[in-house]
Image (cartoon, rainbow, N blue to C red; front, side, top):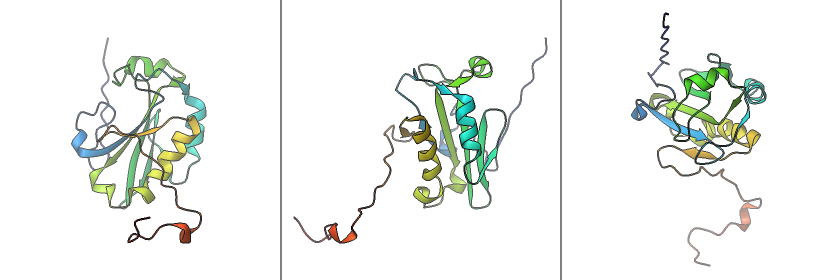
Length: 160
């Protein structure tokens, strides 16, 4: 019985899924609840992500935004345990997933995550109806909503 070990390192050495080196990438997670009990169709989500702008396939259960040297973000469709640990045994045999992890290597993060990465993340989260979380804070990421009438927005210097 032989074992085949495959290791993939993207351009800035962002390690996937197990968060072995969380300081090397800015990580986001899309999950239905805190125990990863909700599932969604892998095939449906796979075909949706494949048609998003700037997306390329990255292995059998992942994608990447690859617009080097400006942007790079891994998108991993995963099956994880209740604790959020990647379950490689279940992942290969499952036609559903319970977690989507997004990894942006710090070298590609820049200062415009709202423009460069969050639209894709929110599109995926919206497709399956699950919230997007910032792994650095553990808090949900809220989509910025601009006021419909800019004149209705209170000036910064007014207290009312």
